Amino acid sequence: MRLILVRHPETIANTQHIIYGRIDSHYSERGFETARWDIDFLKDRHIDRVITSPLWRASWLADEIAKEHGLETPVRDDRLMELNFGKFEGLTNAEAREMYGDGFEKFWSDLAHFRAPEGECWLDVQERVIAFMKELLADEIELQDSGRAWTPLTMNRPREASNEIVCIVAHALVIRSAIAWFLGFEDLNDGWSIDLRTGGIAEIVFDAERPRLFGLYYPAV
Image (cartoon, rainbow, N blue to C red):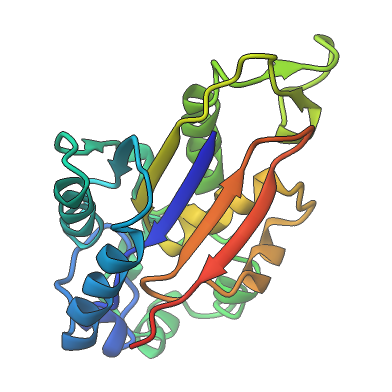
């Protein structure tokens, strides 16, 4: 199986440096240009199905990619939603800092464990992303040792594994969560080292003894 992971294009909230995960925002002008780049970049690729976060900023692009490939309306999966920033949603960093007080510096430095009031931490996101990926890959893998925990590094491809190509349109922390898990990052905070820009595309290939990050592609806009 090959996974094409697409981060949604730039939104107005991105340009305003607003903290947002579950609230939504429409594309900026550059965002719409980026969306067209994504669609054009993928139009000559074979894609078997598309799955998306239900949030508009991801699902709009997913719908357009599916149409371009003559596919059914993409499945919306809540597990692909961005991190819930709780009471920080819609605030700037300065406003969130004023609300939270002491300890706010851990918000971005240790997002894996920092949980905004009434929100999630990054590990919560990765937990639901892993559940989604295990379900998606259930027919693709077999464990090397049934007594070991199920991770991408303890899998072997069956002899007759599918060559299906799945396009997933989601969010920065969702995609970083998946890549960090696939590649065995010990500290999820190291996921910040993955330079995944708005509209960026990452590919994960399962055609050997372990998953491989095949490539990162960025919009030329």
